[in-house]
Amino acid sequence: MTAIRVLLADDQPLIRAGFRALLELNDDITVVGEAGDGAQAVELAGRLLPDVALLDVRMPLLDGIQATRRIGGSPELNDVRVVILTNYALDEYVFAALRAGASGFLLKDIEPGDLVQSVRVAARGDALLSPSVTRRLIEEYVSTPPRPVPAPGQDRLTGREREIVALVARGLSNDEIAEHLVISVATAKTHVSRSMIKLGVRDRAQLVVFAYESGLVVPGAAGQTASRNS
Image (cartoon, rainbow, N blue to C red; front, side):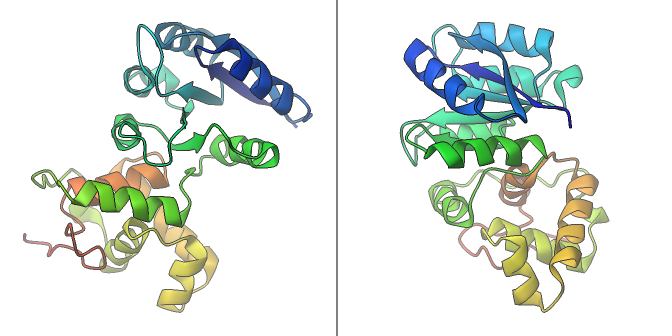
C-alpha cells in the first residue's frame, strides 16, 4: 500500500521534529517535507504534492489561513488535504481556516495515537471535525452569521439530501444521522457523499460551512433547513 505523504509546516523546529518522529513510526506514513513558514509551505505543497499538509495556524510570512487559501485555490493541489494545527480548541482563526478550505484542525497537545489516526482520516478525504467540535464551531459562527447567499448546486439537492446536510451542520456523525432517520449507516454516508458532489465541496467540514453560508440551514435553528424558495 502506498504510504500517506505528509507535509509539516510550523515555525518551531522542535514541534516539527516531534511530529515527524511520531508519524514516521508508522509504515503507512512518510513525511515528505518540512516548512518553517506559510510561504514555504505553499511552495513545498506545489512541488511535493503531499496527501496531507499539517499547517500551524500562526506562522511568519503567510499564516495558516493564507497558506490554506492559496493551496485550496490551486486546481493542481485539489487532492491536498489541509489540516490546521492550533494550541486552542476554539482559536479565533479556526473557522476562517475552514472557510479557506481546510479539512479540519488538530490541537498541538493531541495524543500520539490520535495524531496518526487523524492523518489517516484526512488522507482518505474525511473531515477532522468531531461532532462535539463541529457543534462548538457552529455556536461561534452563528452568533454573527453572514447574509445568506444561495450557491450553485443547492437546488439540485433532494429533500432527503437537504435534511441530511442539515443534520451534518448540526454536528451529527453518519452513525447518528442513520439512527435519527432510521436508515443504514451506508445509506447516510451515500447521501452525504452525493450532497458534497452536488454542492462542489470537498469534505464534511466544507459541507458544514456551506450549509450556513448559503442559508441552507437557518442560523440559530440548526435543525431546520431554509425553504427552497427562500
